Image (cartoon, rainbow, N blue to C red):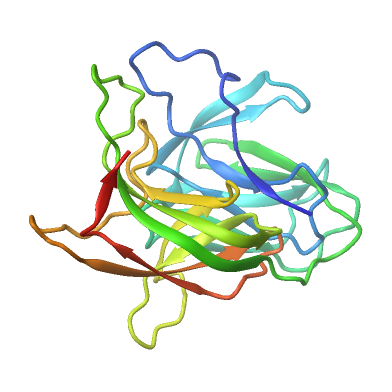
Length: 267
């Protein structure tokens, strides 16, 4: 079973954006088009300190209500559809450039049952996604066999420039042997360190065999800060570790990757 990420609001559901302006930053959360395991683990990512939140009418693109939320002053709840709030453990990963929440129900959810993911602010509550459980739990970790290629890339400015063109630098990884992946964690570890919320640098959505982080979007700031590279530097290795996670929070083994910041190509 393959899981994917989805933005809280799909492009176009909140009306058109005027030419030359960026749409408001929006939450994104782990959801699935297939039933999720009863031991599901949810992640909610804030791509900016403050975001707009939209609750859609169930089953359609119309907006039921909207508002704003900040990672520092929000909670994330899981609620049985039409029922009570599910007891969960909530972790805030604030060391990364973009804050995120990891929500773990304290006991398995009811099989074949619908649930809602709710963002609660001081002013209101918003149902940001819905999911249905499958027949049982999932204890099999996702697969990430290898990193085939790692490149440090800079966007080439277009002529004439356009407001939708991303700028800056990013890392592009080509991955091999991936299966049942919901997303990836990128960690920066010192000698003897193990992955933790303190070493987490960015959470990246699953987009197949290509993983990018850094300046990848024209309207959002970089989700990863690279160390400065002095002029005429021929080689400056950056050592990172990545691992995949699935919809139940199972983790693949760590894969070390070295990106040479001194060897940058232009796209």
